[in-house]
Image (cartoon, rainbow, N blue to C red; front, side):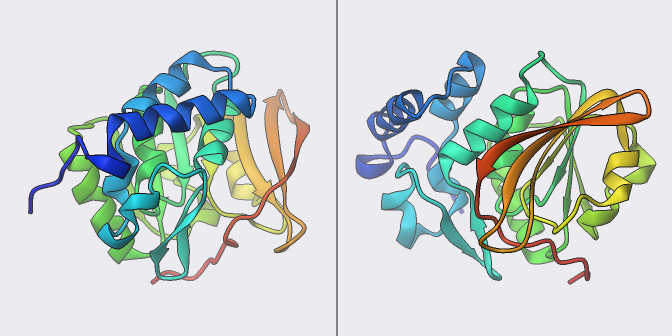
Length: 219
């Protein structure tokens, strides 16, 4: 199957440019994040029937009760993660359709992405392959356990919300490492940035969000 990376009409470069303009108005400032999101074809990560909405600033369903995150949230979380500069090793919890994975892979040295739903993981791999991104490793498993064999990580980004931060993720964060994660029950989630400083953790709050919850069973 041929993947149309360029797009046309509602998936054209003009549509992407309009999205970036909205993100800037909403407060996204990181120039590299904006550039990568301008160049990354979000429409290839969603079903063809929804492609006309690919560059609207909304989350969209991707099957299995999961969603592709709203572009503003992708940009905000990535900007928070990279606030102190480029990172080497980043753990992503929740590959999903692979869009956030693809954005990260163009901004950090290595991405380690964990997904519990094998069908989503396979589709994400195929889509990312079309973008020729080679610095991503995938793992099928329980995201709350992280990827201990590859730890420690300079950054961790979670695309699903636990009610509290899993200890395994805190332990796998390198000294001075940064984790961006939504925390809380549905309807009460708050986006946090957690920075490891020695044996303690500094926590910052960035307001309410709404993500699918962590589910720890493999599928």
